Image (cartoon, rainbow over all chains, first blue to last red; front, side, top):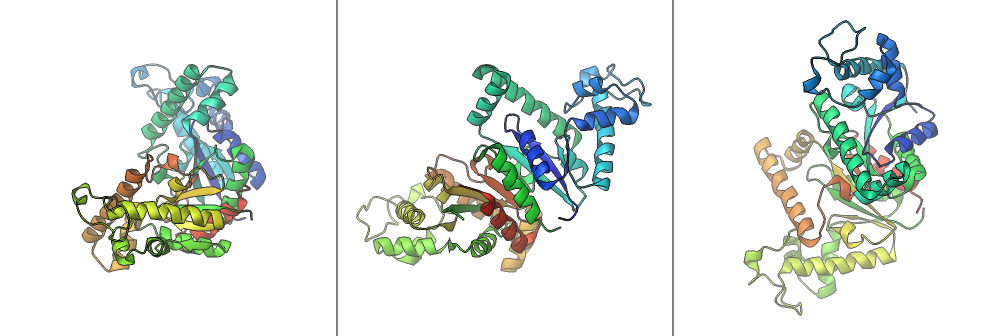
Length: 200
Length: 200
């Protein structure tokens, strides 16, 4: 298989992360999700936990006065913007170096000019996502619904804040898939077969 | 490959029909598009041309008084409704008989209870659709844009009129794909590989 970068956007509760990880294993590619935060933190000598708290969240304009990375040269940027900028560099370096699977972080937007980038979005019907989140956190339906709303909102805000594109809108992706139809393992195999069939 | 029915929805100008036809050939499955009108007409002894004029259009409520199929027993139904009802029967009979690819006609909705039904939606960015339609009909951009709007509107109205679902909305499909990325032949091959990877 020729060189390719697969970016995966996912609704909260769609099992998109687990599917992307299995797909990466199936394709024998490195997988990057939370790893990107660690890499970004290392790059600028920032605190990984501080970065983790800002992960996939757009900057809060009310916090512009504080919440900065001390070691980062530009002290007027909120930490979310610093994280985004450094993560962009990390993502671009990764894409220059190797084929890989990258989850979230608007990686499809960051890499939009690369012909070897395949952007996939994984979704599922709300009933299915509620079941997944209820089990994952051992919470009731009301709490699950509230977490799904909040997470999707954060991801959408993050994406739309840093890009001029729309998160989770079909037209912005090469391929979108409903993960509830065939479950985690099979959806990963189906996506791996799809990616393999693309000749770049 | 086990039994499966693949339904294909498509934006006008996405080359969805051509892609579905090639995919069917690749999978060695029968392909049904306009053929469904002929089959529906035969079934009730109606005029195929009269049916063709109503193809993928919802009934116009202003025409309820006229525009009926003379030979059809229920003279109070507009032809669009007759066509839809007969086409539903044809589609269900096909699905009971064979694996196949069916384009449009809300077939995914008609067959929504079948576990062996895979519904796919093919789309493309507007710039790409404009180029396709300009070339296909040898018309200018303004005229192409107007035809795309009209056709999509008809398809959407037809689908939403006869179903309780939303045409072209990601959440209603197992898989959606942007056909502009890799063109007709390759998109057909990619979809065939995807469909083959599904174990039902």
